[in-house]
Length: 303
Length: 287
Image 1 (cartoon, each protein chain N blue to C red):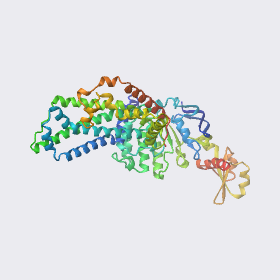
Image 2 (image 1 turned 30 degrees about the vertical axis):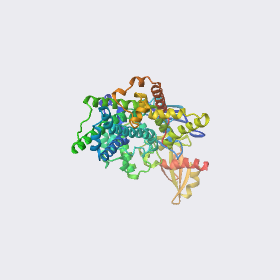
Image 3 (image 1 turned 180 degrees about the vertical axis):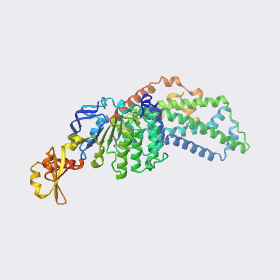
Image 4 (image 1 turned 180 degrees about the horizontal axis):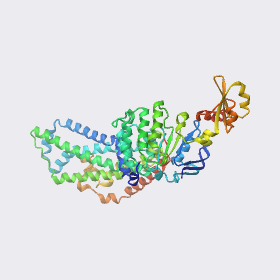
């Protein structure tokens, strides 16, 4: 090494390269959501049988119901990709700080000047930042392809492919998607924090350590007090982000839509979301769990 | 400046004492061999120096406290824990990119030049490489880092003789430059003897021997004597005696060389012989 090189150390970006490293290792982060989109397309193509006839019936409805019926495949695509991303995020978090100890590579990572804080942040960035971006992109692509397929099928069958959707409405749907993905991550943050904490702590079977203690506590609460507050809390945390971030539909309305909540620009409720104690409590718990992850990783050895 | 300065370094795992009051000072520019039987505390000592484990006692590495100042320390210290820790899913090129992206003292050109002399392909994954090639890759990454202190914990474990030899040759010829300090622990004493400047024997958490190689060569000698001189040689209090082809080899610490020369051929023992003499005795006593 020359003196010149010593005086001008090369620019390093530990956080950036650590996130890239995570993506090299966990390719499921983008492959699984993409596969979910492919599955949705296959399902949509199968539904194409008889679609022109159904579309002729739909076109006789009023614009509001037309929009609802035509929108169903798009809502289904969004739901399927959301589920895929949540599953990928959960398994990613469970392995993030466990696999490096099992394969002993933690000793290699610790031989480099990347602090435990940066390592934990880079791993938390996958469910909190990378996966929402993947979710938005894959959902938009999946929905665009569905629109293209439906147009091709209908035109080939000689049926009008017209929809009541204006360009403004489509752009609004993009905003809804972005909002849905961002609020989902923020709402799920303490879940991801818990999974990362188990990942850095467990010496084996992180999945069981993440799930069984929670189930056991729910069971104890049920037996001791015949109540289910914890179960509701956990359930609300896992599937409650829409209730927290959107105007909630009445039960009757939900039933009319076949259980699918309507997401539209008029249903966004950012005011309710940012003022809900659940969001902020969750984020505080998330931060505390990340701090615990940093503390524990400092003291962790290969297993 | 001392690269490593340990006073009363102690580490216990539950009731098992891994390090029992180690005093050790390693000056800059030395190559120290840390040699001891399995479970002697070698790895524990190195882990403490690297800030991987908490410890009791005083320890300074490059003037820093390894436990509380680990993040700053790791910019100047490199280590190879053993050959099996490079992540198996990583591509060789990604490994080079990653280290270049996080280490301010990494010289990419140097790493690539070293790799070009091997048969390692940049597109291979670590899982596809042989054990020897993984060690070469790790060495290529580490040698391209301008570190002040390099710590090697059993770096050649499980490698064949050719890879072991080329590993230490590269280290000495392409890396060591008298401003760096290297600490290496190994079982393969005889292969590293010629590269060391200092040697420490460690046994059951304590330092059993701490000498420079010059002192080692002046202090220890062995004499091969025939049966007729055996009693005279034994009278000079050898620390060990062994048989070879019907003759006796006696190992002495600080003996009068002129008197020994009269009894037989005097030569410097190998580190391995001294190790066996010192550790074999204590191991035997333990059993």
